[in-house]
Amino acid sequence: MDEVEKVFSETEEHMKKSIELVEAELSSVRTGKASPTLLDSVKVDYYGSTVPLKQIANIAVPDAKLLTVQPWEKSMVGEVVKAIQSSNLGLNPQSDGTFIRIPLPLLTEDRRHELVKTVKHMVEEGRIAIRNIRREANEKMKKLEKSHEISEDNFHKYHKEIQEMTDKSILELDNVSVVKEKEIMEF
Image (cartoon, rainbow, N blue to C red):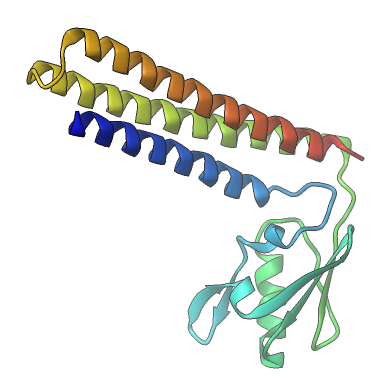
């Protein structure tokens, strides 16, 4: 039974990580509200190496439509502005030399629909990852059955349990998707 428990725990852990990865990706999708996670994908050239923006600056949200960035070193303001502009987030940073303000433009109806499509695509990638994890777990169980470590009856029982785990994970992903889509479509 030790191998069976190992397969189940690995499968559950991998499915949880897939969901967490999708949630992290979705946090970078812009909604109508400002959030520091919006800038998570921004990388800045910092003395020859590329580092995440949050490692060299303080990011704040003074109100729902504004982000502020204050680099810890004044000399980095120009690099930070350049990195934000080239990040393809559709943001237009404004700098006064020491402080950067990033007003969030209102999302148009078309842009909101595009973002919902992006969310659906990200969630579908997560579903595919979970189904691949299920397939790998089922293959491991099949090998255990072929090597007579588990019986055929137990194989079918475990197969069903793995499917239930998969269904639960996909339902969790669907719930995350619904919440994000609602957030995007709010005005």
